[in-house]
Image (cartoon, rainbow, N blue to C red; front, side, top):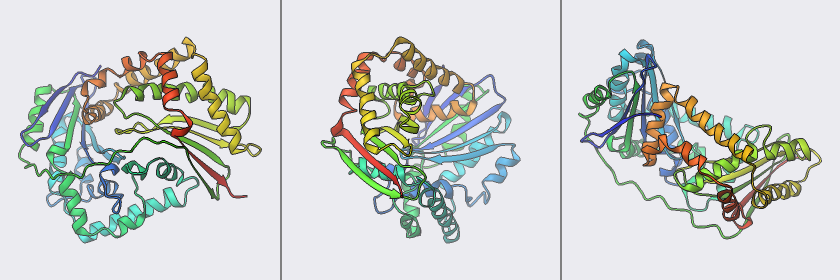
Length: 412
C-alpha cells in the first residue's frame, strides 16, 4: 500500500507525493506525457533524442550532473513508446536541489547547434550498435511493423530510421520541446520522509512560477481490428532461427491486460512454466522460449517467441504454440498454477514498495495512466482472474486471424 496525496498546480502540473518513513533518501520523479507514440512518422526518435538533450544543460546550469553529484545524488532517465521519465535520488535534506534542477530544465533548456549535433551522433551510434549491428537487434522492430498498420507503436522508441534524427533541424527540435515540455504535460512525483504537505509546498515553490504553454498535440490514430493473419520471413546472420507470434490485446488499464499478463506467466514464468517444461525440456523443440505482454497504454501485444534448435522447423514451433493455446482453452489451469502466478505478482508489488524510487516512479506512472488508485489495486485485479477469464482471453485474442508471425531465419 502506497499512501499518497495529489494536487494540481495552477499552471497544470500534477504533483503526487508519498511519505516514506523508512528511507533517508528522497526520490524525485518527473514524467512527461511524450513518447514515440507522439512522433510524426517522418520524424521518429525525437522523444528519445530529448532524453539525451535534457542533460545538456540550461542557461542557468551548464552541467546538470554536477549539482546532483555535489548533493550526493544519482540521476537518470528513460523513454518508451508512451512517456519519458527523469528521476533523481538524493539525501532527503537535499531534495530542493532536485526540484530546482528539474524546474529549471523544464523551460530553460539551452539548445544550440553544437549540442544538437553532439547528441545526434550519440543517438545514431546507439541506433547502429543496438539495432543494426546487434544479433536479433531489429527483430522487435520488424514485429512491430508487421503488427501495426496505423498506430505509432509500429516503430520502436529509437525510431524508424537514423536518418530521421540526422535530418532533424533546430526548428523542429525546438518545436518538439515547446509542445511537450511544459507543466500541464508533466507529472511530478516525490517519495521521501517528509510531511506530505511540506512536499506539496516545495513543489509549489519551485514549479508554480513556470508559465504553462500548452500546444495542441496531434491526434494519435488508433489501430483498426486485424481481420487476417500476417506473416513475414527475413534472413539474418544470427546463430539460430527464431519464431515470434504477436496478437493484438487490450491496453494497460483494460481488464484484458491483467488476464493476458497472468496467462503469459502461466506459460513462461520460469523453468516450471508450461512452455519451458513442454517445448524446451520435454519435446526439445526450442533452446529458449518466452511469452509476454508489451503493456502499452493503448492496445498492445501478447507475444510468443522461441529460439529453435537445429533440427526444429518453424512450422513445428507454430503448431506447438497453437497446441499450448488450445490446452489453456480445453483444460483449466490448476489452482496451484494460478496461485503460484498470483503470489509472484503480489511479491513483486510488495518488494517494489520497499524502494523509495520505485514508489515515486509508480505514482507518476499510474497518474499518467489516469487511474492513480490502481497503484494499490492491481494485486486484487490479478487475484480476481478466473479460468473462465483465461479461456475467454485465449478464444478472443489468441486466434489465428489476430496473429502476426515473424520467422527470423539464420543464414545457412
